[in-house]
Image (cartoon, rainbow, N blue to C red; front, side, top):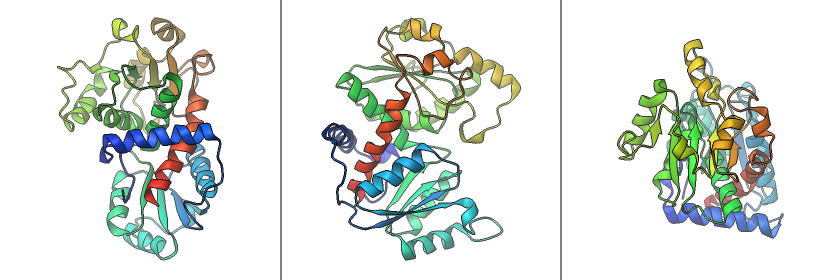
Length: 302
């Protein structure tokens, strides 16, 4: 594995191995390792970050490496300044690897083509694979296996949703259902078609909440409605409200169903405060697992 860009590029065995190793590493409580052996990785953040920045920075240092963290305001990258190719080539002069959190997925793809260094996708408008891996690890930690788990995604399609669809396609044993406003149905369908999944025939995507499916849910996942800073129209916003994760929604699921969210969250918008702060919420466990899955990504690349 030269780069880590999308879950779809991992084989099923690579994915399951990464998750198993991350969980084993967490349980062993080993901290200092020397897999990076003094290597310096550039973390470039075109978008603001809290958990991604902290987890990658600490993961690299725990593996014996060093970090150089740059925000978009720190460098010359921009249409009227320096090109992506010149910026990536410059990074390559001084660093051993690149971790990019960007607005446009094309930036990551271009970086992987332009640079001989390992490139890691720390978030783009199209995918957020590290977050999805942390979610999968959380479920594995909770239930011991992903087999026969019923996972429900609520709300519009986001980069995190895209990564969950890619994970679902790997046939890890869990079912995946999406409840979203009708206005997002076409976007989900297009994503499904990439993998030969019929969103309509297979009943994966529905613009109505199916209480029968919900009653079997082991996990309910959502994301901020303003993902990647999207400007949601007022009429669409009104449609999404039906797909908030509320106490009532959680009560319709299994009694031990867990709630997950990538954070940051807008309480009482996409999720009620009583849900995200309740006993069935695993958002902080999921956030902590970012450290362990990212350490495994780094170990595989180096």
